[in-house]
Structure formats: C-alpha cells, structure tokens
Length: 261
Image 1: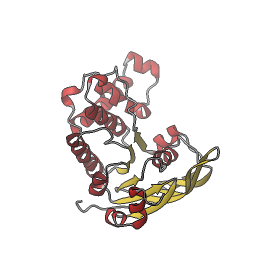
Image 2: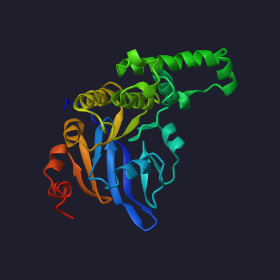
Image 3: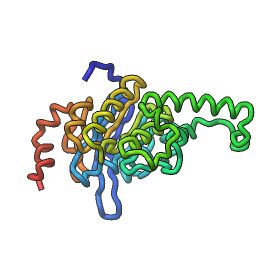
Image 4: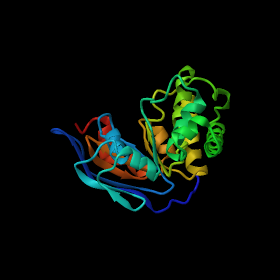
C-alpha cells in the first residue's frame, strides 16, 4: 500500500443488532470507518456482511444501536436520505438497466444531482439543457476513468460480466459519493477482471479521495487493498484490525477453517 493520509472517523457503527423474527442476523456489532480508508468486511457465508451493509445504507433498520455518518447520528434512515448524505452502493447482484446504454446507465447515478423539473428536462430547455450538459461531462469523465469509452453506446446487457460490474461502479461514482459501499465487487470475475477491479478501487480511493467499505470473499484481494478489516461470523464480530493482524488471529483462522463450529 502506498502511504496515504487517513482522516478522522467518518462512519461510526455502534452496538448494532438486527433480527428477523427469531433469527439474529447481527449481534452487538461496533466498528468505525475513517475518512479516505479502504475498510473491508469479511466472513464466511451467512456471517451477516450484506445485512451490515443494508443497515449502513438504510435498507434495514436495526432493532438496537446507532450509526453516525459525518458526525450525524441516526437510528432510522431510508436509502434516499443516506444517498443524499453522500453514500453510494454497488450490488452483489447487478441491478443495471440491461437494455440501456452504458452512458445512460451511469447517468442514472446523477438523479439526485438534477435540480430542474421534469418538464424542463423533457423540453431540454435553457437551464435544464445546461444542467444536462454538465452532468454528461461528469459521466464522460467517469467513462474515461473506468476505461470503457469503446462501450459507451452499447446496451449494458451485451457486455461481458466484468465490464457490467465496472458500469455498476461507474453509476455509483456518478453520485460523487463521500463513501462508497461495495458488495462483492469481484464476485464471478476471472483473475484478470479482478486485477482490473482492484486497480479501479485503489484509484477511486486515491484520485477521488473516496472512503470505501468493501465486502469481499477473495482474501488475497482483501489483504492487498484494505487498510483495516472487520471480521464477522454468525452475526458477531470476531476480529478487527490491520490485514496482518486479522490474518494471524486465531478466532478468524478457526472461523475460516470451520473448526470452531
């Protein structure tokens, strides 16, 4: 890792517990994420990683605990409010508009930034036209950044899986987030596609200064690109620290080798 300046705490997760009926998805989870770091959440299948991400971005409301973002604490928050605060997310299962072009998919990430009303947008008149041009400039910059210029007019459904994941990242970046939640961005990729995605994640963190929270199963990737790692197992936190510290933690080793159950 190149040396970089990690800032103050941006996201503070305190004593989060989440239940679905009698099933405990998360139990008393606490950790923080600092400005400008890459923070990984890892754990075996069913550990509660996606549930944790869903609590952070307002999809689930935990029964206990609180989450603070940029100094503002909330226990109930919907996804739109979280997005307006500057948190964007990619999804494990791609939620792209398969019939729409790459550029139009990424443009949907600008929705929260659009100020003109629907009528002006439809007429593409005056301020609305100027606004759309400005938004398209941002999107074109993202397309260049992600090296998908050759596919900008291609319907997303016609692209290889690895490139579709890149478009998904582009749509999240179009929101100009302060913090980016990545839910298994490498899932289903071959080695070359993973290397590309790693490079883009590091570049987003470095060039845009975006704070990144990452769920990932590939331990090699996690150890290579993360500043700190939090480990969940059966909805409980069993490890938290630098990649090296976590790699050597007996509880983490047992959870991954399956000897603790």
